[in-house]
Image (cartoon, helix red, strand yellow):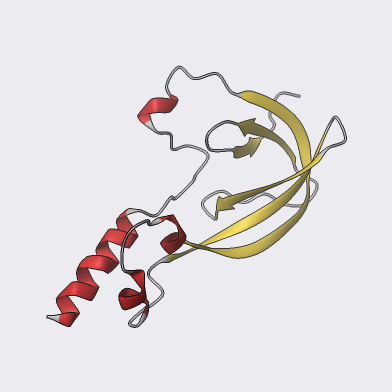
Length: 120
């Protein structure tokens, strides 16, 4: 019975994972206007995105007792210097990777994304 409970909680947590990619949008994003800034990658740091932080009002402690790592996604923290001189940090999963000094566009919105700058 305890195994079944942990399995259900694990599936729920996995379903709540926010897997942000530059090419995946919510239906609510259709028609929304987002601010876009140019910049370049200053640094890239490998990270793990822990999806259990996105789950509210559940007993994750029981699931963590048997945690097998299925709640973690590989990603990168990018430090980006914008053309106006500001420096920002954006976390994105590993589906699209950028090298240091790459020119990028930062799309600000409910979910901020980084894409290659192909405007030049």
